[in-house]
Image (cartoon, rainbow, N blue to C red):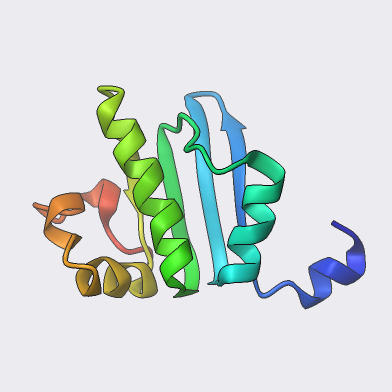
Length: 115
């Protein structure tokens, strides 16, 4: 991604490595273009992640929600559910999809919206 791309980028989805494992990071307006860029870089198959940081998401498209849910489900199936940090936009997306309680049943701090 060039400097001019960064200036015009409205949303981003990336995989990062951390000391505790992979992290799926979503930020800004996660639209079809951001998801398409992610799929070009990393492929469609969900990666193993220990956390999903979506605390900086300002808008979440259906394709962005799908990427997020795919990674949550893959982590759960592996026996090590990923911690989820949400934003109000992500919480609204999860609620609209009818899966908020599934991924945030007790309002755990790990899944709490960032402030």
